[in-house]
Image (cartoon, rainbow, N blue to C red; front, side, top):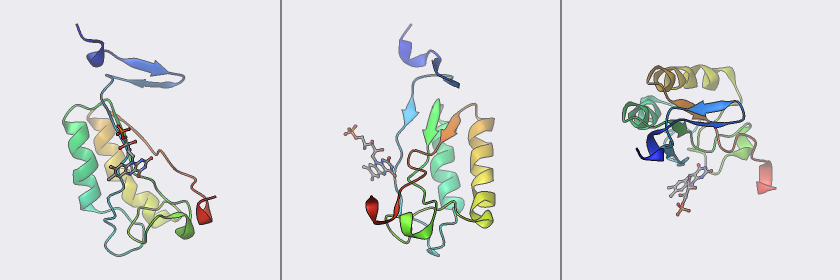
Length: 110
Ligand SMILES: Cc1cc2nc3c(=O)[nH]c(=O)nc-3n(C[C@H](O)[C@H](O)[C@H](O)COP(=O)(O)O)c2cc1C
């Protein structure tokens, strides 16, 4: 059997297979408020429904200045945290894991 479909454990993270979705900035927060929407739910959730073992969310700013563009996702206020929850829940319910790749990008790209 291909190793691709076998679990992988790295430190305390174990994924059900080795199909990992790379992070992809989608520039789709239409209100420029960093709050994820149904678009992000459908985009990220579809990978989990498709069977990916790990879904990495896009680069997500920890403050407004950390974003690459005004349409990028954020996680610096509670409204944004709440909006991420259904996405995380769907992905977990599908048996996948979700991680943020670039959760602490600094202002001015330093
Ligand atoms: C449209 C697009 C958006 C991307 N957004 C991110 C991102 O938000 N965060 C990140 O760490 N990498 C991002 N990447 C990089 C990819 O996750 C991935 O590392 C890269 O596409 C791998 O390319 P390679 O297989 O050709 O080396 C992005 C890539 C593309 C094409």
